[in-house]
Length: 215
Image 1 (cartoon, helix red, strand yellow):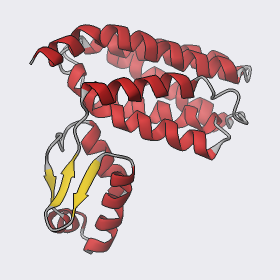
Image 2 (cartoon, rainbow, N blue to C red; image 1 turned 180 degrees about the vertical axis):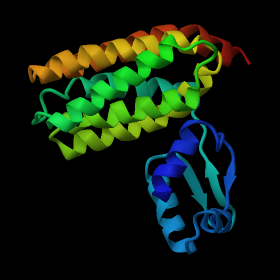
Image 3 (tube, rainbow, N blue to C red; image 1 turned 30 degrees about the vertical axis):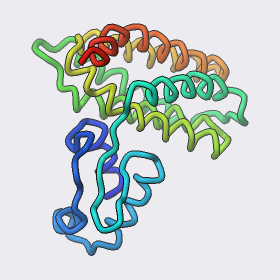
Image 4 (cartoon, helix red, strand yellow; image 1 turned 90 degrees about the vertical axis):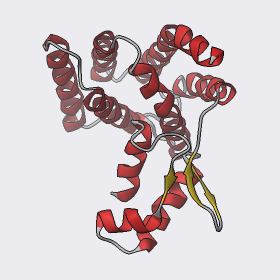
């Protein structure tokens, strides 16, 4: 729970890049000893989300443009393998949970005013995790999840400066396309749907990335 909560906070920039995390404060917040906090931080370090400096502290890592290029290059290649690495059908309950995500996104699209980006981020996470249950290869699943969370922080910064309602519509479309593929167990299509949407998102992010480079 500590690991997942802290990972989500890093994703939505509650802990921004460069922030220092204190074991004692986190332990007090969760009402635990420092041991489970230290274990959570070590797992986050393994995934490249923080760096632990002995005698100094724990710092949230930053994602530079070159690193982001590598992250997305790998994501594009790996998600295309979803349907080839011992895929397995989802349980009916998982399919129903994906449909529920779609319904929640549909409601967000219909609402007036600026959408809650943190809530949208949670829907992205839930959908991502459900679809990843298709992956039969533990190694492929691990790498896809690590890369997803590495890119989260940059994505969240971009969402603050783009049209979030439009991005919700894009995710809604991805959910519907993925469901159609899952309902007939076309796992290769599942991977290609995700790859296509990552590629289109990169195209939409291009201007934002240029503006960040210029700073």
